[in-house]
Image (cartoon, rainbow, N blue to C red; front, side, top):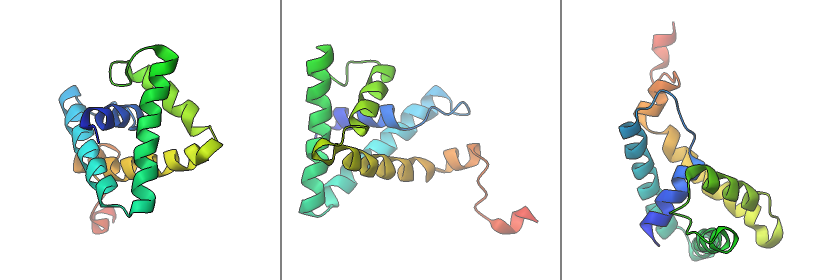
Length: 128
């Protein structure tokens, strides 16, 4: 699977956090996209193939609509396109997009910098 395409999709899906510097955002986005690439390849066949089809469908449908590749478009254009696909019920694209978003957000919120930025406390004894 094309790493640049997965990175572009990750940029479109993960939230823009005001507490992250640009370098941190790029680094975290890269980590999340690498996690997604590994997770997709480790899924069972019946889950792996539909997710790969989803990614390719996103890329080609975006190309048809905008005449630009998904990776070359702005983040806002990519976000709009992923939101459109997430609402599309044909071929269960909405369900596949939910799965993709869930995997990405799990990896995103698992990052220590993000957890600290949103005020998540790993050690609950510090809440007293």
